Length: 197
Image (cartoon, rainbow, N blue to C red; front, side):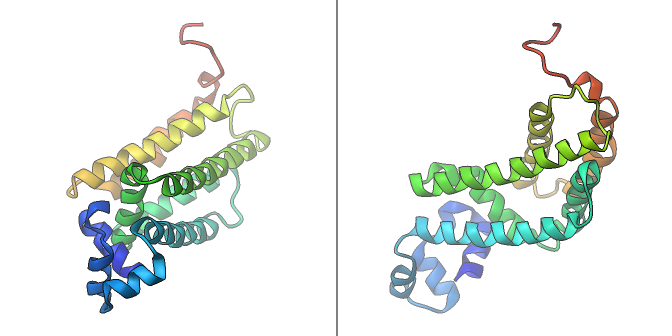
């Protein structure tokens, strides 16, 4: 049922997922899906949990024995390498990330918690980069982490609305051009109350 939900999410977003559609596509009755999950939101939380676990495993593999900026770059390049191989899973995941927030409180809380896990990974790698002296010691780590996440999410959002958008290329450019420049000039990303200070 999880795989059928991922397929429906990938093809039509959150609104395409109904307990009946999942049941029909999985070869079960709506009643069975309802008995198993209780509601659409509980099913979506189960799917998000499955996708989070999948992404966590991918993250562990791509960052194994890597620290600081090497971990960040390795993770993003790994995603670029297999974005189209796992297209359905990525689309389903990002449909839930972008549009699942319109759902009920339980799904919202789950999404907020999963986002904080991603953010804490970025912060951890940036702190490692400070220890490894890959970044300026005056860098505002939270600001740089926000820039990394918003750059990534912006590219993904463009890909979600324009399937001809070459996200693999843009993710590689994010690593080799944008982030490289930001990291090389990390002394410019220090904490200020407003620009021009």
